[in-house]
Length: 458
Ligand SMILES: Cc1cc2nc3c(=O)[nH]c(=O)nc-3n(C[C@H](O)[C@H](O)[C@H](O)COP(=O)(O)OP(=O)(O)OC[C@H]3O[C@@H](n4cnc5c(N)ncnc54)[C@H](O)[C@@H]3O)c2cc1C
Image (cartoon, rainbow, N blue to C red; front, top):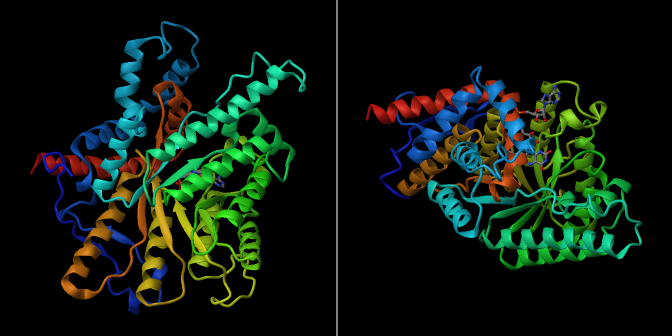
């Protein structure tokens, strides 16, 4: 890490009850709190990133947000050569220097590798990298053609091939232990149609492509996340992904993770069903747990009625898995529980703290549990990520003083890469997501500003 740009001071954190959690009967109540004035978890952020983050979160949590979002949407949707960033160098420059640099890892191998390295040197165990390009083929010119048309078939095949090549290129930018995130709908119209029909097996070209992607991932010791999408696609995504786990998550290796959206009323049942399958067939279940990103564009009746119910369900699923129980309460002994790896993907500080505390509590006390890792998106909830890093690094120091090392849950950052044009829709979604999490963003903005003042007063 560059010592000129990083103001790392040994973080001094007060983990309310955590150090003595072995004797605490209520591990879920453990919360991390930074001790005011005694060093900040955000000290690991390079100064340039800190300045960007202060500016960005200040705008997002101010009355400037609404007009800024409107402007961004207008610019992205604009067909005008005067405005659209692909044709207007000034607009390109502004977008690149503001939100692109904040949320994206770069547009080519060199830039992305540098970003990945930067995250690792800050203390992150690894990264999750995804190619932001969403729709890989323009089907407008061929969609009127009959299905039997060769031209149409070639366009469908090209979309799948570009998706495969993009993912294989992404894979080369990460290392052992890192993740790559993959969206099945990214394979274009053939995937979208098959998922919508609920086909139990992907079209043959997609099947061959995803098999090649998973095999290459396994060969380099990395892992693949299959993203969760809208409900219309999700039953087939689950089936396709379970089949991949059945093939690749064998004999102790975990290559493929499925995504569970906790905002769905049936998600606890779904997790239990997947656990039973893994148990019966003898493979390892990889679960990435999210709350769900499509509340505004999905069947609302299938989603919990209130945010609090989603939060409770999320925390309940985490707690069940970490204690080797079925979330539906089906009776089982921890010994009969299948092998499971959990990735807690959230910016919600309470969920992160509960998962982290419970995992450490159970490992520290040698209680049956499962491996867990946690992660947030680049440019989001930095204070949450950095607090985890600070705790892991202070535990390392404790272990160094001969007090014994308890394996810490790994902390990851999720990065997106692609050219500015390829990332535009991803960027708009991030900005909107920050808007809907206004309270959290305000909290982040306050923490970042406090860290900036601390450096100025140094
Ligand atoms: C690393 C990472 C990977 C992700 N991958 C995926 C993915 O593959 N698929 C996907 O769908 N999402 C994904 N997400 C996004 C995720 O689903 C959430 O939209 C986002 O993280 C915000 O939720 P949160 O857990 O961070 O916490 P919070 O900000 O506390 O929760 C916000 C979430 O709560 C839920 N919610 C809000 N209001 C209500 C309400 N009235 N009733 C019920 N529920 C409500 C919604 O899910 C909303 O997104 C990912 C997020 C991360 C951090």
